[in-house]
Image (cartoon, rainbow, N blue to C red; front, side, top):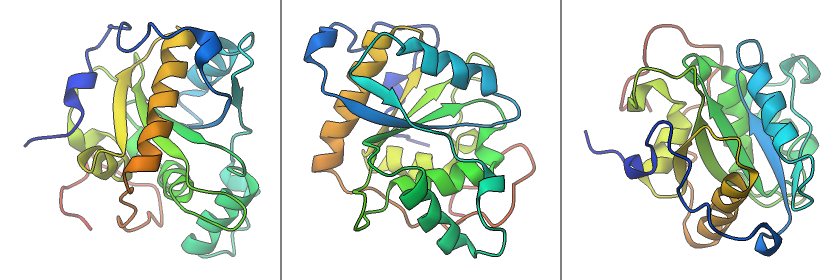
Length: 203
């Protein structure tokens, strides 16, 4: 199966588009989507990465417990967009082995792709964590992210602790956001998924 942006993933490489001077990178507010129980340490490391770089601000993470349980899925996604992703310009998905199963990740990606009166859609990219050790396989990343790789809206990169590299990837994602329409048609998760993979054509 052909998959878009595969050439951007080379595990352990941090040299992709990393040469741009940090002082030329525009200011961005970044929302991080991740598996809260398994990958909190990487989310924390990601935020620390930008402690001394004023161009990148990390937005508050959404917690499923913060969302009214009586809301339906679409209303919950709207709540995430308006309450947690307000003013964010990019969403970075941290991809571990179990990330694709999380309804919170699916909702956050879906919410970030929405245009609302209070917030325009966000750019989108994924970063493979060191714990993702199976080699790139399309059906073990969040499906909504996969479909946006296919349409060219999103790209994938390896984990790095180089703030200059990541800031440049975010900037490039924001340029794509203005030129390419995202694919947000995948059916929203209602519950967390199980199994070893999701299935192509599930929508």
